[in-house]
Image (cartoon, rainbow, N blue to C red):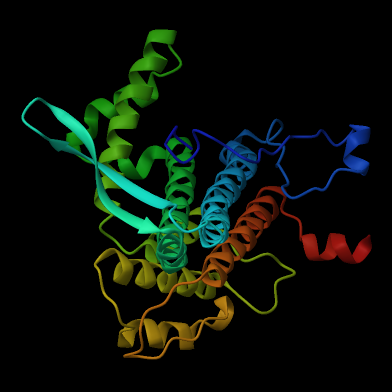
Length: 315
């Protein structure tokens, strides 16, 4: 995952533990890395499974960051509600007074008014948090695509317009300079492809990744499949779309999507006020956590050629 404002500060990081490390007996194992050292044809799977921990860290850190903000709003509500008369909160802004910019109050509240304001903004904070977690989903999906495409770039370097790219790819091992030239050219080509793909619904981009990579749902999954996960992504996307564009009511599409995709536990009725709560945020984080597990196992089973279901039955 490329450096971004989301992963600049990680509140939780995952540590990779070797299978022969005694620490693995007591450490909680949440990710499995496929060893591709003896199977270079599946090197992309080794790299992708190696990223699961990073993706999970970003998702959890993003959730915790917003959780801290929501918690701070609750604490602030309690704090300002308890203030004695005569004390309150001033919200300052920068304004011009003729001699230059100055700080001046935009709004001054009593303690009770400030407490009410904090209480009222919590659903809005949860809405921004859901939108941010959706952004994490987008980063994960495109990061997975980049790994697959970089190891198997043929589909993106077809055609006469990519003749130079094919030459750089074929000669990338000739020297360090050749490696750098290929990496730079590839980064530009993938970024152009990604910009076009961002106009497509994310749930379709996700399904296309599974199809092109030849992945299947984990062998021990019985209740959900790729189309169900895609439906959940589409549902989160619609909620984000309504919030981002200032819609205040549930539309027919979101109501239908939540009915068709019950995995999130959401129920929205067309025409009702669109209210996003901490529980919605927790459901999105839970889904991302489960989706990463599914992706991890799908990759491992494809690379190893083994069924984790059978391994679990044996053990």
